[in-house]
Length: 167
Length: 321
Image (cartoon, rainbow over all chains, first blue to last red; front, side):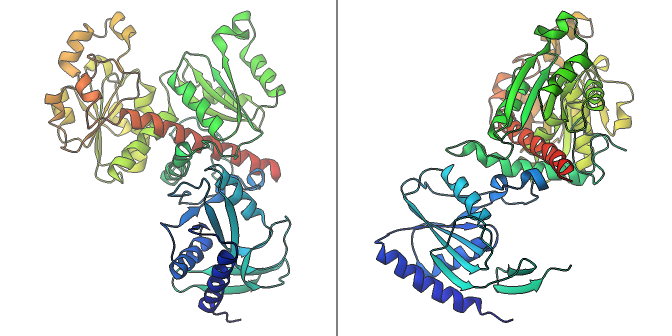
């Protein structure tokens, strides 16, 4: 399946701009979840303009599966190069699946301070949520089975891959 | 088989640098880099080890090592209990294995052990229930692996990598568990040269076999060095007549501005603390621009967070399977 990620991004950025203006939300800050969410956040940030750098979250220390898989071997730490207190945040991830990553990301954000609001923007919502977490802006909705997966490759070019897990 | 590793080569106990691969040491340093920024946030802890219990089992007095382990555990959201064994049950005649059984019955997950006898941490690791991780916080003259790794992190942060570095370790190498672990870590990580510098009475015999060059003159020993690690001189060494006096030691081996000029111009100066100002190091150097002594302390928390999370994580995987 061929999906044009740039087309999705254009539409997401229009929808996000509309969402922000409806809510009279000004000067939002972008926060991407490593790794795919950071790429998407940077692209949306470029298209919409706005303040300062994008923040980057590595939720490895907030995952709920430490007791099953131990310490996650990842490289880059979180980096929020701004004060989140009383700011409107746009949290960006590539794939929304169970919602556990977003729960972990929000827990981490609150350890940096108390934002005024958080909006969730995702490139793909793939189905299979296990927590009451939903996105405000979605690039594309899929209904995948547990054995089917979608993965974002990048950063340049951004490419979505759909595949079935080997049994 | 190395008791420190599980069958997949993951860190289960951290007792010594000896026998650990370079990749694992680099893993510890990389993990520590990820934990370091946690200490700079508004909320200085992460929920990684929530619900885990760590016991500081100190048979020998310590302030900074004990408190940085305590802070590391707290920043990982673990519960931590400090046991000062000298003042506890062992002085009432309880045996070590009874003390260990008692702590196991309290459902602890990790023991951080400091002991005056070499090999104590490994002895305990062999004794405890299989779900418990043991971290060596210094045993006799044998090893102090977390101190060595925080020094490696400090060096890597200042110098980017280990290749080509000349490192001089100056002072009482003979009685130093820190030096022993540092020598192993530096050689495993692939520095160009490890030098040990000190009077004959304070350099162990056959230290060359560990991969070091021996110098008895500090001027020659630190010439061109990229890293100068000063060791603490313990007062009891003077009492045992290994040294004439603190003053004479400073004359012969103290790090002064004049001597430091012989090292590389961008050399860093390290010290595991606590410092004896005017005995092994001049105050002007300890507080000077080349000193990274306080960075060592901050890095110690990050390194201890990393090894605690790695070891308890390995045990968690074992428990889940």
